Length: 328
Image (tube, rainbow, N blue to C red):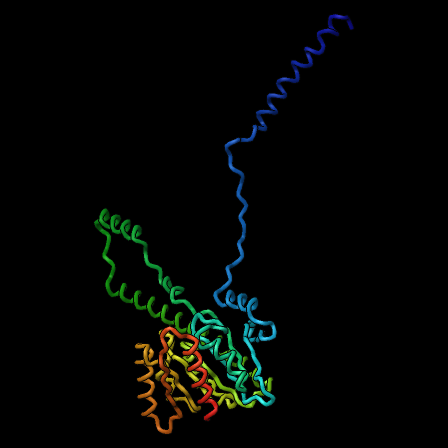
């Protein structure tokens, strides 16, 4: 090969390579600096329920020796157990807190569960399932949004042949939706009652396993409603006394407490606060209803408010409950 050809050879190769490089760059464009990286969906863990949060808090605050995990159906729940501080316990008091109350609630529940063992009564305070929320039924029958309704009215105005909805058909559809919603609410209420009763069943069984010769069911607030209803629907020979403290209806469950009490066959104490107007009126209705029942084993005890001294109020309640238990 001549010297001239050898000198020109690198230039010829470079001429052939450059077009190929341009084609490759066109096929693989540079990344866009302004483009955002693709977001990866992150699955978040479900938030704990109110009762789960309360249980976790109590597990950190209450001594391990007092914590018991009981089983109700396919779920476990926390209960606080304090055995009586005497050689021969008088029995066990199963405490049912009210809605949104923990097993160590500072009003009535906690003080009673801690003080009763000092006078010979073991205490077992339960955590309750979350109260079901009426809001879950709010969209049982979906209704068109305002914008959709406006759009439908506009289309109807454009179409002269559009027919008005038959009032009878509309009323029938509304009635069907209402009935469906009521059935869903009733089913939810029934499931909620079964959960609560299962927990009380478990608590009674636990007390029996610990040789409680007498078992008392004590409910506070709406817990009193559930305790009374349990004694009405699932009477147990092991539970012979019922204590209600500031008893209240749940406001959405049937039958009402006033209808449950006449069916009870056990000695019942109804502790009320005369200075609370709404519970006081309900308490008067319960007392009047008990007078209409022959051989009713119903006692109502009025508590006095002690403004500014919560500790004395709780001590008053404890002394009155203890007096009634020992007088039976």
